[in-house]
Each structure stands twice: as structure tokens, then as C-alpha cells.
Image 1 (cartoon, helix red, strand yellow):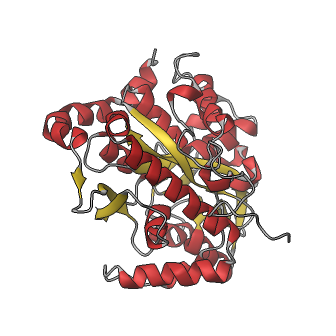
Image 2: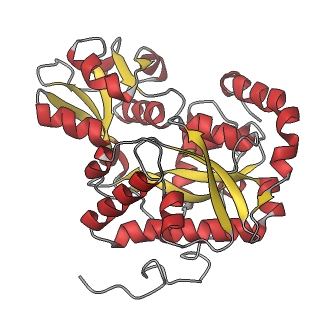
Length: 356
């Protein structure tokens, strides 16, 4: 049973599923194949960046699928809603957002982890160097800027506040507002927000300019941890099992390639892919790539990575205890680093790795 507050949060999603259901009924059950019999998978990309699926295709890891880019999307919740309603065939988002979609009875399943944090790749929650904010309690009545609500950053901020001892009523007094990542540093320095969420190139450039310090980071909360997964519709999985298996194994091998390949080679490959796909993008962001930020080999999902957010929703009164289990949310069935195809400590082709 979904509690009232979560039900209200999910109302827009449910409405979207209903309103677009008729328009997408055919697209959700029908697939396109190429002349040589490959299944075409529609997806949304990210400007100036390379997704693992795009890397997998470039490395030749797919045999039975071909990708069809239909545009860009910078919002995880929007990406998985588009996949759920048949606008695309797969999408990825923070696992808390995935859980909300599953709790709303959307027939989708996560099949592989694709982003997270480690010592090199993380999101920080920054304040100005001379800010009086030193603790979670100092945030009461203050503004925290992030790229979107209801996703990774909102969950992480609320989790940190709770761990630091704030009550639910006190946490409600911390104002979370949407600020595009490209504007976050400026908003912080101009005093429009008290805390700014910074990651990747935006964090590196802001730190380089100085005058800011981290209040906390997602890596400081959970260490090396996968936060987001890629999902597909259940009917698509059932009707295209061989294609889905190929998609997951290829994507897993691409993730593993970045986990086992020197950073300079990954950056060079990313620049090559961006340059030749003809979308009028700059390759500058590739220079800021540091690590895949995926904890499990090849994106294998763990129960802990899902159960953490189930417990969070239950603890916050947004989900009935027992309403969801991890098995309702994800499967590792198709991942070669889980199903026995490759040893978990092997490389992208199942080969033994050289000792470091």
C-alpha cells in the first residue's frame, strides 16, 4: 500500500502513464528491426557525454541490438518515465526515483547499474568558505540548490540531515530548490542559495576557483556505491529477451572496460565517439571524466543498493512496510558478471586481468 504523501508525489507520474498510455500502446509492444535482424533500441543521450550503451556500441559489444538516439535528456526521473510510457526503450535514474515508479505500479524492471560514487567520482554539497553553516542544524531555514527534486540529490540531502539528528519537522524547514547545474556555482557565490550541489566538471571548476568548501559528499555517506540503474518495460523484456540479454551484456562489458582501462584511454575514446556522432557538441567535458563511479563489476546490482531506498521511503512514511521487495525492482539475470558467463574479477571480454 502506498501512503498518502507518496501517492500525491506520484500523481503526476500516474497521470502521465494514463494520458500517454493510448498514444504509446503500439510503441510499447512493437519493435523495429534492421535489415540484418537487429532490434532497434530508442534512447535519450546527454549532450557532450558518452553513455555506457553508446560506448558498448562503439566497442562492438552488441550483436543483436542497434541504438537509435532520439534526443537528449538531463533528468533521470523524466528519462525513466519516457521509457515506462514507450517514448524510449530504456532509461536510467537514481534508484529512489525508480522505486517510486515501481511503487506506482509501472511495469518496469532495472537490469544494470550505471552511475554512483567513489573517491574520484562524487557529488558534493558546497557552501562558501566563510559561510557560518558548519552542521546539519545550521541548514534549518536555509536553501539548498540541486538540479531536480525527487531524485538523487533530494534523497541524499534528506538522508544526511536525518543521520545528523534532525527530526522530520526540522528537515522540512530546509528548503530544496531547483537550480540548473550550469548556474549552481554562480547562485551560491551570489548568495541566492546557501548550499550548492556540484559534481563533475562543475565541481572541479568551482573548487579550482576557490572560496568554497564541502559540507558533505555522497561518497562520505556511503563510500563506493551505485546509486542509479537502467530499466526497461516488462513487456519489452518478455517480447525481446534475446535483444535485452545482448543489450545488458554489451553494456556491462562497456562498464567493465571503463573500470579496467587507463583513464587517458577512456577519455580519448569518449572524445572520438562524441566527435564522430555529429551532434555539434564540444568534447571538453570528456577531460573531466575520472572514473565510472559504478561499484559492482559490470554494473551488477546488489540488494543493498535497492533496499537502502526502500527502507528510506518506509522510514519517512512514504511507503508501507513490505509493499516492495528488492525482487520487485531489479534483475541481474542478463549480466555476464552475475550469471556465470564471466568471472566477476575478469575484464570486458572475460579475460583475466593483469596483476597490479
